[in-house]
Image (cartoon, rainbow, N blue to C red; front, side, top):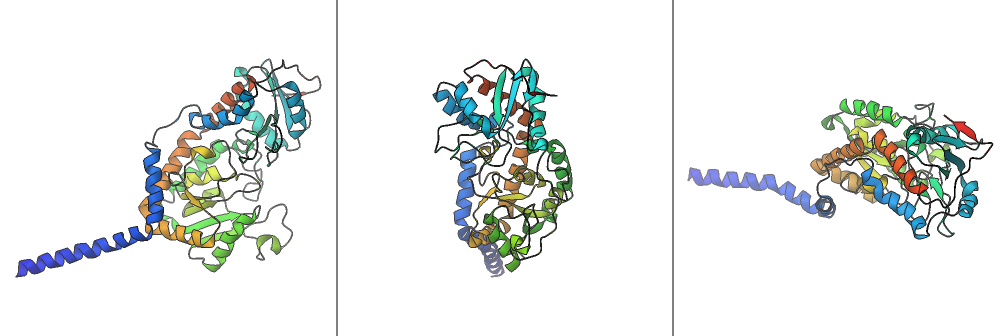
Length: 380
């Protein structure tokens, strides 16, 4: 009789232990299915790509329209000159028209071109250093380089100036966000101080109100601070508390200090957000809102593989936070893969190599011989 009693107790214990997992799996089956589908489609994600190879689809897509048109005509280029800064590469030297409204942004662009200048043929190009793209698909394409765009634009994407200099200047980054080579080191160093089990289980955000898409998260944070720590900071357009949703502006927080949180969120700004690539270095789960605005490397990052896709709907945000809390192993695996991809495939040398391949392929499309403009400045 005793042995039957022991067997009954053992089976009961096993059943009780398994029940929460079964109930949990059923509750989140929709998200778990998306995660498992993404894993099965992705296959082996551990390998490292060489020379920006993961991003070649973007390059081919951006230049494809010009290949279909038989190349870039001189008159098309002239029509585009008002859309950005005119650069020329002639006999291994870089020249630029004298005026550049955002000097640090131009320096961020020039840094990478100068590093590869000896490998580049003669060419000229128009580089847009404003936030917004210039060549809308409502019109015929113009050969303009922009750092970010949506599917509604023809612009050719290049790695943003912020990989070197010219990013937003705030109190915690007084000279402007830049030096990706150094930020990679400082953020990963901070991440080591906050291993997964020591991170706070909160969804964290600090940033200015460059887009109203961020409002729902800020309001949710005020209502449910046990789930979300999100607040608006000042930006250059700030005039009163109305610009921070009727609350005093919060202090800015260094990217390195984001690493103490398990869940970090990325929104678009005016265009794509410069913070996105930095968040992965914290070994935290990145929640990414929207897929319209991209930089050249965005398409290589896959939802549920490298980040958690999120909408601006308050219910969706709460559900997703509850999901990652209930499925900590899945959350951690996404954080690990996101970090590994950015660390291994978005190195400074990968950025430089993308620049090189982009400009060499672009130069093949120019249908005229480049003559140096007399009054252009030598950049060195």
